[in-house]
Image 1: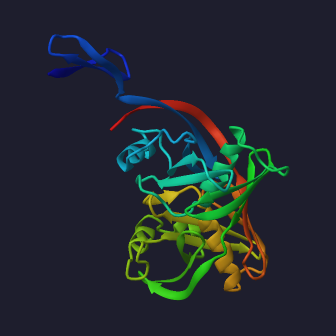
Image 2: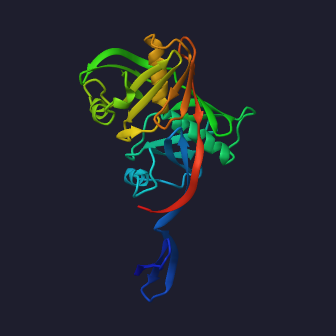
Image 3: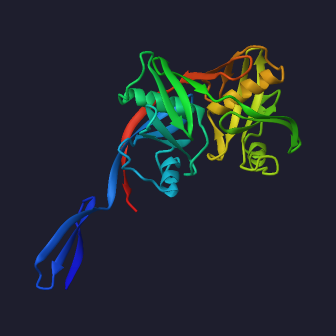
Length: 303
């Protein structure tokens, strides 16, 4: 007969598991890791902020509760989402995106730009034009580092255009740019009730079965607009939303509210995102700032 016992070493991230025989002869000794120290970078894409982690060795596995705790402001690192950079069989890397609520999210445009910039900083090989092909949610995306802390991302072609939906007493328009978006035009953007009205529309599953992001837009010129966004998964207004900026530019051109096909979108952070697209909208590009704010590490319990 054999038996075992476990010793937790003080100030250690592992336990020792001893297996003994009936006469106390040591049969086996192994280490059981109870926690892991993880390094991360905090990136900002025009005010959209993300925890980005190199997981190319696939050694990191978070629960959605852990991701939510990390993204919670004041008690965690704080972020709109968490991105894992993982290997891909076909492309330079795979982007695994999680919303701040801890659950996997649909495509995040600013997150994609930050993922490409992070890949560049950790030495993932790029093309001669500092370009990357990567995958996210089963789709291929192309990105280019065009200048210092500036990334251009090719988006998916938009789909599911719907116009003149009456929701919560407002006229809304909708489309999908990799994530679902509701569009509301307003003459005074600062007066928009983004969290109240936006939060209510976000949960109108009679119009949006999976919920939606909600964008309030003020047209400022034939080639520019300003935007504020209530983001699904963050469940609050964010300082920027890449797929929202794209949705705003495309819908505004579709409705004839702007004439240009290079649109400057001012987000709540004050940064400008550029959305450029072909007349048919089958080629769409999002360009803007992406930078590392700081780097750090944390220790997380293994389940």
